[in-house]
Every structure is written in structure tokens, then in C-alpha cells.
Amino acid sequence: MQLAAGVPLAALHLLLATAEAALRQRGQRTLHMRGYPFCYDPAGAALLAEALRQRHYTVPLAEQNYYLDASRDYEAHLHPSERRRLRRCRQQGLVPEQEPP
Image 1 (cartoon, rainbow, N blue to C red):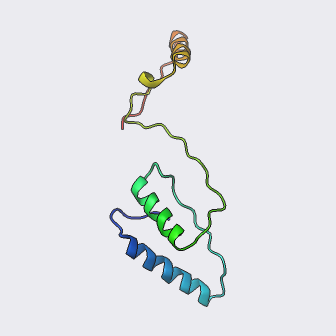
Image 2: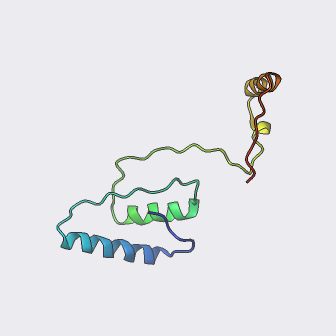
């Protein structure tokens, strides 16, 4: 589930309540949802997590997502040993590039 920007918490509760009621009418007792990584939309993911917490949902699996911020200068924040490895790669003719943000 991914939220549009600016969705208020009350609207999210209404959506979840409607989905829960429809599932109950069909005899469903469980609902499995997959969220998106927090790095895609921190505010939306936090809002969804809070709404689910308020509705007493449980989280059976929470995977940590590691990503590189494309707007940050990658090489400037490397550990010295990593910079040495990068320099050796360049000496061997490899050309690392960073995608523009």
C-alpha cells in the first residue's frame, strides 16, 4: 500500500475501516499488506505505520532497507579504506559513476 501525498490520517482510517468491514463480510479473518520502504516516502510510510499501530495491527516481518542517497556525494563519505579500494579500481581502468539525483 502506498499513499498519495497529503492523505490525512482520518481518511486513511476510513479506508482501512471500509476494507476491514468488506473483508469481514466475506469471512476473511486476516489481512496481509506490504508497505514500501520508508526511504521512498518517509512521511507517508510513517503515517501508514501509525494508522496501523492505532488499529492494533501486528507486524510479523519488518525488513531493514539500506539505500544510498543519490543527492549525497558518495565518494566524500567513504571510509579511508573504501577510498583506497576505489582508487585501486580506477587504476585498473574501472570508471565508477554516480546517478544524478
